[in-house]
Image 1 (tube, rainbow, N blue to C red):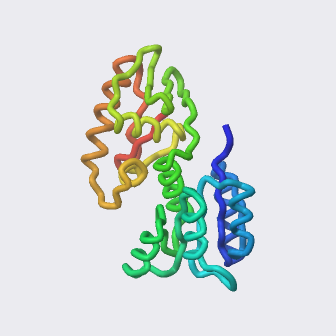
Image 2: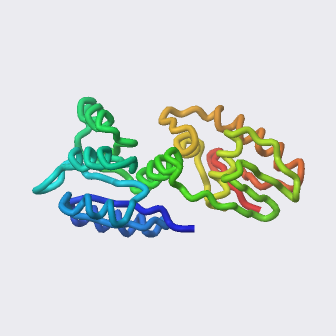
Image 3: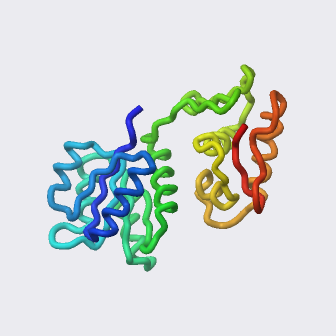
Length: 223
């Protein structure tokens, strides 16, 4: 399975190098440019799954112009990185066709979550078959089974299970699950609890507990 390919355009050297390192560690292939020169050639050569565009670039085309090039030439999704956080700035970014908009300073963790969400929405995220103990999650077919029994999961339950199964042992807070699965920024712990409770019942009908409650009501999936 090939890694998702990201095209990053960022003129701040320290930010660009830091993001390259962090995103590579997250198993992305990253092509980085310091400005907009050669952007079109890079898109044609590498066919990125997602472009990450700083808006205020140095000499040459800015992020808005690069976004227009993308929209004119194809359907490559993109998100903006910018220090401009006014409503007008955001509206301008989304009017051009941005799939997301992240204001500096931001955490790499938040950027990774947003990248994954865009790739998933646009069908560009590889969907492996996940195996944890006797649990199999096939997100391509939209199906999960345990100990040979196919589980009757709702689409949301499958999304919750797939998210937990991608990183066995990772502790997910309810807020992180809300953002990852529902793209909610508002906090609604009850929504997560209801789906996890139903998912647990279906999993535990065929074996021991896999979804564990961790500190502060967070969750992890592990044998």
